[in-house]
Image 1 (tube, protein in one colour):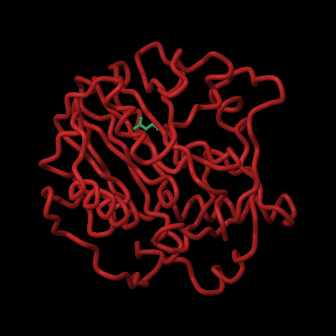
Image 2 (image 1 turned 180 degrees about the vertical axis):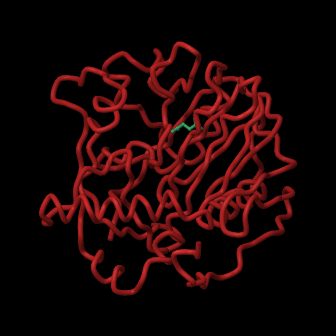
Amino acid sequence: MLAETDKHAERPPKQLQYASFDLHTLTPHMGAEIHGLDLSQPLDEDQSRDLDTAFRNWMVLVFRDQELSRDQHKAFGRRFGKLHSHPMHKVGLRGDDPEILPVVTTADSAYAAGDGWHTDVTCDEIPPLGSILYMSETPESGGGDTLFANMALAYELLSDPMKDFLAGLTAVHDGAKPYVGAYKSTPPEGGYPRSEHPVVTRHPESGDRILYVNSGFTTHICGLSPRESRSLLEMLFEHIGSTPRIHCRMMWAPKTMTLWDNRCTQHHAVWDYYPHSRRGERVSVCGEERPQA
Ligand code: SIN
């Protein structure tokens, strides 16, 4: 079978060399392992500058063999902004520290959080800028990898007529879709957050256009008939999930920490390790502004 598109994205080359650490890419377009930083210690000015540049370039950064306390994990998150509190904390479902989201799957779990393509908490009016997951236990069977999708590339690979059609559209992102529909939680008083965002956004730092709908939260496209909206979302979700060249796969080990940019990526935590267990904790960083077209 042929690829769905013969387009090649025309992107400027990304920075591969950094003075403060070694960087090993996971794919040519997204994802890199950083070697030579100890995140339990404050970063100096050069390390900080290089880290910000690498994050802007590579969107998903993986740090191996990090010995971190919960406070050090949170302190690393705070260097990017204020820490986010997950909407499910309000219903007492995600641990007792509102800044830490336990990500735990065992043989008794009814679901594995994030087991489907999504961007974190896009139901919020201002969704988190990024998330940082620190893994303490990986399945003894192997597996439990996380897939990421580069949503700037997802946008770029669409045809020009489709890009024209999507420009100016907005879509609703509803927390009830995953948290009630998939996770069966009882919503808090007033319900889970629900927000309308542009279907194509601009990354606030790179200026890249981003395809900003995800199967986790997006329920419909405003102004289209239900059938039109369903068909269009189905096509876009298939484009995102079935285009391997926009993906990167990262394999966890205990003490690995991964930082991802929610403004330009989606991810999918693969639950292929039942009945084994996987345990980690996630910190997310508040966004600074509503997603902009
Ligand atoms: C999530 O943040 O959606 C979970 C990611 C993962 O468990 O790999």
